[in-house]
Image (cartoon, rainbow, N blue to C red; front, side, top):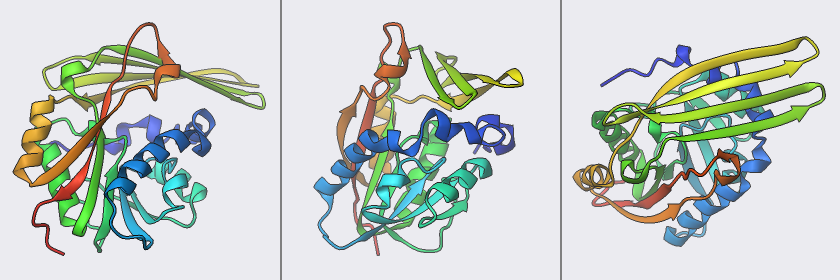
Length: 257
């Protein structure tokens, strides 16, 4: 299994402070409410339940998840966790790898809204699904958002925000580079009273077909319903591209408590 080398990600450490300028927590509302709605359709209990958020980043989704669940967040990047803890002091955050983290308890819900693409092999994906199952209570729900190789496209995105004399623009280029991977190249243009700073880095991310996803789900007994989530990034997309996503949500067969 390939190791994720967290220290190389300046986006999520050195530049983590830019996250809530470019995308403050309030901007996550549409996405979070769609995911909460998908979970609500499957929930049988009306009591306040527990939720494990794998790959929680800077806590934008948790800003809304915490209204309905008791949340624990996990991320591999300490820079993002620092921002998340300030944003959501009610949430417990721990540093860990979603493939093997052991939170020390089981949850009613496990979610991965926007970071599963950092798994670059089928072994990575299997490890995550297996670990999610191991940390769910009996009849617990698992939700993951992913893109399918079948309809993935090379795309470009732009994000921009201003705070006082600070202006930040982030350009993102997605480009398929192998059968099961694509590159996301991030370029940061940071302007303030001192002038312009330019930072950039390349992230190698996983890309798997719908059949591959379903085969892994079947292997671990994940009975998932699905829905399309295709237009969240339209406002940031440059040109005529498209960015299609699927939400998978359901239970694991015979998952013991």
